[in-house]
Image 1 (cartoon, rainbow, N blue to C red):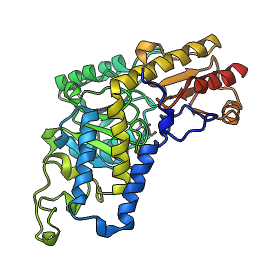
Image 2 (image 1 turned 90 degrees about the vertical axis):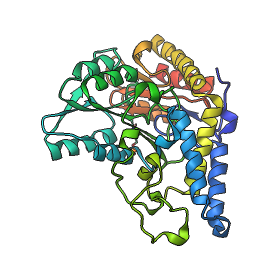
Image 3 (image 1 turned 180 degrees about the horizontal axis):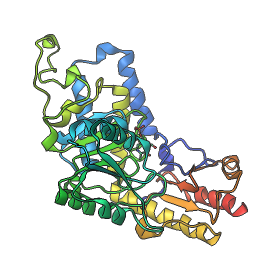
Length: 376
Ligand SMILES: Cc1ncc(COP(=O)(O)O)c(C=O)c1O
């Protein structure tokens, strides 16, 4: 178990923030790193041409460590939707073929596929899980000879239900389907082994479980797409862009690996320094230890919630870091107001309460949650 890390955040004792799936707070280290990045822009004469390349490579190295992927396969993106648009632009799709998604999947990982389906005549297949089960069996049952793309998360953004990505990856390869992953609600909180899963593209926005500023994200691109199409033509992604005196010796070749997919103005020191510091903390604690710690906290919350009549997915069906509590009927009216009056912050998604602690939380936080739930 990782001991409380609250001292590394600016979080008053009476604030009970159990809402990392909404957005993580920036740690003190991240805020200092953001300020350091902003200070460079305050004095641009201290920011040389080489600096445009140094922080992006450090970001890429940290991103690769968290994805367990080669550094050359990582690209810097501003959002999950941006990475998903790159995946969609590079995957073949034909009339009659199928794209598999989960029911009520996060919209960034749905709208782009609807668009591609409309353009090509392909079909979206939406899978539904059995009550109290993980999503894996439903996804595996839907994969067949017509499957062209499986576009899923590691755990569902609303109910925390798991997808076994190693099993889904193998099933995709067996039928020749591509696998696209939105890891925004899991990377950094749950181990992910890119080498074992073998996705075609894997994306994570960094402002939640990666403890980074808003507007930062990472994209894994499998080597077979490294000659693919980027969605913008950023000058800095072309080969030789390090030499600012020769930028109009226009080039057709790119920086190596997945760098051609980096977003325009990727070298933003304010955001990159912050994201690097956020990921440094995760790497210092270790993702397996984070997962185990959050899993134990959530087991405790789930047990206390069960004692007052609320249910959660069984442990084997949900991601350890991600708890979703349900009332026997609908969520009682006024509950969210009562919680915020007690400084307890969680999310309501549909008829469930999303409870997502992190290592800055302490027992008093979940006790305050259970006290309000018990009262109502
Ligand atoms: C599963 C998932 N993906 C992506 C996002 C964010 O998407 P984007 O980066 O496109 O704003 C969220 C935000 O809640 C999410 O829950």
